[in-house]
Image 1 (cartoon, rainbow, N blue to C red):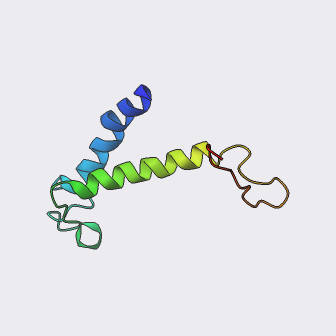
Image 2: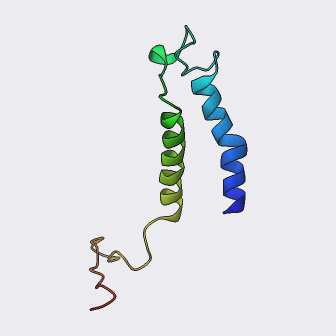
Image 3: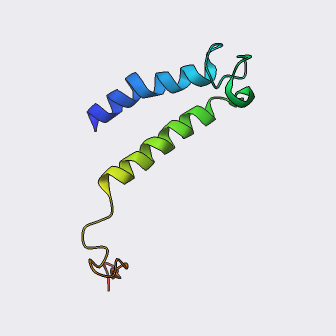
Length: 85
């Protein structure tokens, strides 16, 4: 977890921030050549949530579904009873 957090905050997030907030960023609204006119980021929330959401999606894809959650032959979900039942 620590390695992932260091990589996200030290490498990935600064790159995405540059794209959106820098005057020369390809997604910046202050760049005349920006892709589709650029983005207007209200208080930084778009950059933060986009970066976190994409990281979460990538993590879910890497981890995959829970073992034993799906039937091997039919690929259908197996019901998992609650803990108190």
